[in-house]
Length: 127
Image (cartoon, rainbow, N blue to C red; front, side, top):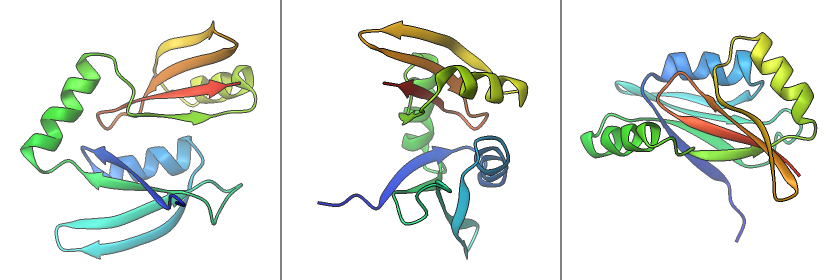
């Protein structure tokens, strides 16, 4: 089975769109108005036909509670693979990204965790 879309709940779609494109470097694949919200999907510029990341509003109380629990427990929503942790950490830090865990080596890989400013923690992993 091929995966096409990975969803992430966000507290503010416009703020998330700016962070994920301007800071992380994703590009917009879809941005379709849908009433109060939008259907926004992003892709990596290196894989424009790859997996899409959907910025889903956390409007449902259960979604907001789940997201808040993950954040308070320090659990990342998902992980992104990077080829050069040192360079990516330096680039993101210079752009003002707040890391909750700086690069740490563990079991043959290096990982770091950052706050996406929209209610989520994400890991970046080099292996």
